[in-house]
Image (cartoon, rainbow, N blue to C red):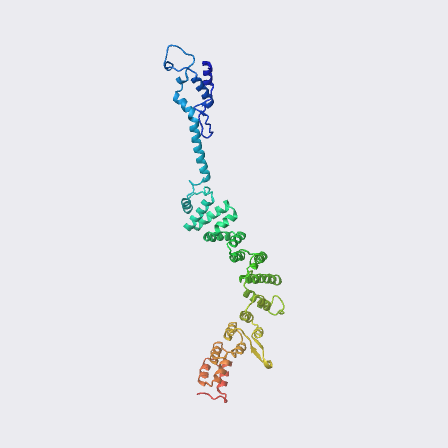
Amino acid sequence: MSSAKDDEDFWYSSEKRSFSFDNNEVDQLFGVSKTDTDKLWAGISNTPQSEGSLKVGNDYQPLKPMLSIISEETLSCSMSVKSHISQDTRCILAMDKLQNIHPETAGVQPDITLRKILLGQPYSLEQYKSLASKTALLDAAIVNGDGNAILIIILFLTKTLKKTLVQRILAERPDAVNIYIKYLSTRLQLNEITDILTMLGQSMDAAMKTLHIIIKNTRDSDRLLFKLRNSYKTQFSTLTECREALFVQSYIKLLEWQMAVKKIDGNENIELNSSVLDCLKHSCKGHWNLSEDTLMTPTILSQQHDVSPRQYQKVALEVRALAGEWDDVDKLLLTKGWLGSKKLQIHLPIEDVLKVLHKNNAPSEVLEKYLKYVDNVERRLELAKNMHCFRIAIDILVQQADRIALLEYKTKLQPQSEEYFYAESALRLPSVKWKS
């Protein structure tokens, strides 16, 4: 048994520390360690107990009983505290384990998060850590139908998930795909668009979307031609049933033609992405008389781009008539017949031909030449009067032997003019048997 001095030195030299759950120091409580408590308990057990030891007496005892300082109940608690602390610690660790399984359960509330997004309030998506919570948030946004919220969540997924996993999630949500594709289009992210649509089995849509973005956003002709060639090679060439593949091929040829013309003609007024018909007009205007095997000729251009004979003849007629090249008009519309005669060879209605010629101020002899090919006599007479082709009109009235109609027509002619004298001569023809 220790002396009184040793006991006092122990109590005054012992370090006082309280229990801490963080440090899990279950062996210390109230500043007394378990080891030292055991020693004290052993000392108390060896100390004789008597009722008088708890009472104040006249006799001085150098060794104070432990029970005079700490009650027996307190000492009993100190012996069982380890078991209680261990049980509490196990509960805390179990709770921590559950929180690690679903750490964001308390904070994951898609409805509240979406409300904040829609109202423009501060929000955070950091608590959405599991795949289930992220997809639930996206589904809630899709049900809500707000495109901005859907896009915000999709961008959050792309930052926190693998690319293949994001694509798989989007594949099951067409509404989200459409919004994301539109976003990618504004940012010209062609590869991402192609990957997503191809994964969804929409290779044709991917090719057409790529083509649209390329044409709309590329201004440099060389770069545009390069992108189109690459797009055709990587996308359209594998789409055997895609009719647009022929369009891309034709478009590439047209760009090549336009760039060649620019180099030959210099700064001609032909713009990039001009239509085939615009290019045909340019060719009919500046390259009409070239040999037939020259790339710049209208015939070669028409053959390359499947311009119909009707379209070709209409464009060529308008251009050559505007230029006043009436010989070229004849070469375009007439061909040789039997015994050197001229035969009409047109793919347009004859009245359309006459309207183009009259609009471009064709001479009377040119108009009269083609008026003869109008089969209906009454219609030919009407056109002749409207186009001021007096010879044709007077000849028809003479053939009809309609003297009254010819006299009426004469009153509308300028007196002493060529057509006036021509009408008078017709009225005096002895060979005509007039109706009245």
